[in-house]
Image (cartoon, rainbow, N blue to C red; front, top):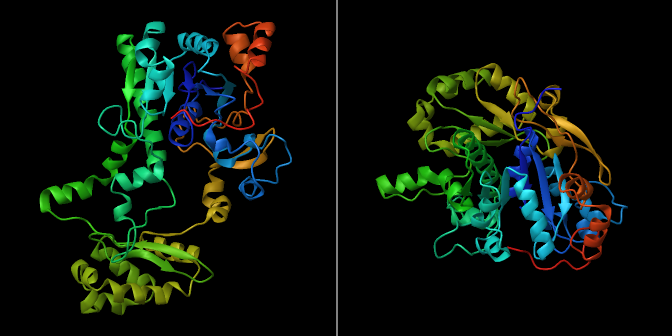
Length: 428
């Protein structure tokens, strides 16, 4: 079996929810040994409560019969695949000492708390670098480690709004959509953090020293809003919402198709593409219409143009439209729901989805590797860990604790596999 790119790199993952776990998932997918640390008092909240309500259980992938439903939440199991999982109480002195011993054997520590947490625990970078000068510490607080708002709490939706993204999300003349459906700050921050960790590893190869990385999730998301900022800087103009339209392309939109809640997207970047669309749909008269003759005239008459296009799309299946237009070199694609994505022939022929069997959640298809390295393509090597699943390996094999020592730690609640019934407030 080929050696994976990050094989031999050990990552301590203290992060919770979406952004941090996605960063470490990307590193784990590329072969790093990622050790996710949770506390019996503070499980990753994405596991859900110890005893979920019947309504919450509906979000589980299958009817859950196990008495450990916190091992079965779909979102948690996706972002924590290819990881080991241990429990450790970092608030206890014994927990801190074991953590420090693990840091000595590791390459990266990643956390997504507010800046005050690691210092309060006595485990900030100044302490960790004394233990291991080669350690790379990734801190990814929502709003950065400095500034008047550094200790504020935020989630992905909060960042959507604070970054200006939400203001531009919605239809022309309507109020902004504060809930985008996907908290973009989370996955973007995860990718940014994984990239920064790789850059720090490369730097360490050259100079032998680790470093502390500060990643403001807010500032990373603002970068995606840079065009609006530059527009205001240069033109004193605030970009408004435009729905599915485009600042220059026309037509450019999402059109209703045959069937219930079926849609297709079409984008026309040039006059030549417009002419090909007209010919492909059998409406050559559109290209000769003075209202649609060139890009500017089409842009000025989008409402009528969208109406005409939808009169055609409503008679066809969304996949059918894609094939008709793509055959004519016109950018078009169907709007797919989750069921259609899993059944999509293109994705399945490429083997994008991988079936993973979790000991308590069962077997399900997961998104696979979306960066396919020719020498080391990678795959999902193991499902997300159950709570405390790898205590024996980490504490016993890596740190050399005896069975008696581990039994005592478990008795004191420092480690274990059974969470505290009522979870305490988060460590943010």
